[in-house]
Image 1: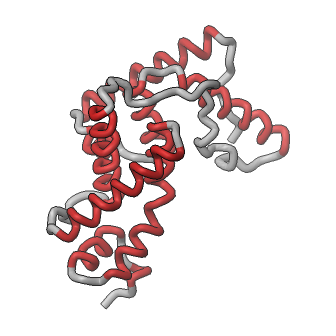
Image 2 (image 1 turned 30 degrees about the vertical axis):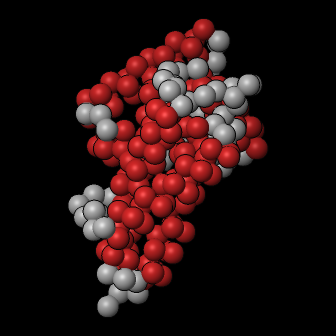
Length: 199
């Protein structure tokens, strides 16, 4: 039998369903950072993000225990979809039509990107500035476009996974990305921003 650390997330989920509680602990530790980053990006409030995160994992546990998980797709995409649905439910309860509430200063500093590039100090500085500009531009995108850009570029999700998480067709997810890129190019041009990075 495989050791827990050698198992995929999907195998761990099935192991937890079979009664191995340690498998769930490992699943949580592997996925909590990525999931929390996504939730925080969408809700822009740490207290709300904490609540959504906890509610998401309660639902994950309940669905696993109820046998509502099959290892037909990525476990991470499955829990992201649950988180997305929790967020949407919370906004519906508040009768709020917006997915993302911008902060007072439109800050997206909770996104990590500064450590993506390793080169000399000058290149790192330029890349940091470019990433800061990208975050500012992203913050002015419509909420569905921001969400798809975040999932695609900051969480490396496929369009199939994005469509499953956001409960839209792949064509809709691709369309949102296309419009996001067009809008980001237009905004960069308006503000004379150079968005090229050094490799």
